[in-house]
Amino acid sequence: MKLGGLGLVIGILVVGLVVLLINRDNGQSFGMDNDSFARVLVLLPFLLLLSTGIVASRRNLGQNLRSALWWLLIALVLVIGYIERDDALAMKDKIWAALVPGHAVISTTSDGRHEISLQRNNDGHFSTRVSINGVEVPMMVDTGASSVVLRAEDVAKLGINPDELNYGVTVNTANGDALAAAVRLRQVAIGPIVRENVRALVTQPGRLQSGLLGMSFLSSLDSVQMRGDELRLTD
Image (tube, rainbow, N blue to C red):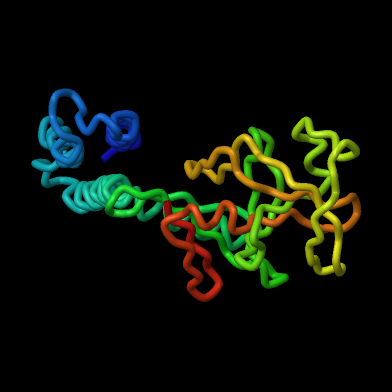
């Protein structure tokens, strides 16, 4: 197949794949289900070869066979990529989570529940960015903390004045005992998992290196499971 013909075949496959991705949620493309459209997409380049007489030509049979194998390989890669798109996206997220500490992998279980997966950091902890009242705050997941615990430096970003809080609760931190103030957070969210009116504590300035995502949030989930270096939060 000449370069122009091969380019046309690739163009058909790319456009078809884009159509499939755009209509992924609808489940249909041009009046047929997406799986049927994907099969038709594979056949189109072959029909193009037949219509132009390339396959029928015996003079350049070897070249034509090589060209046919090329478009077949391209078609298989694109269509398999579409069919296995969910697994491919999940693998991409897992690789990204391993490379970027705190990256949360969001997925949906077979029964429709939300699941957040976190990879253990080099320091041995599980950390991620949590949306607090609409503001992202870096936090460490801590099942040993009875409550969500925030740093005074972080609550200032939430519109809470740490100087006006009543630090009357004693908490144990990695730096020893510290005083904390009880507050209520309008909203705490990790991806699609959202909780409102969450009980929390705010430590005095300089007493905590990272906020803690504790049991006042975690206990509301369906499950919190640790598997090796992976932590799964399911809701």
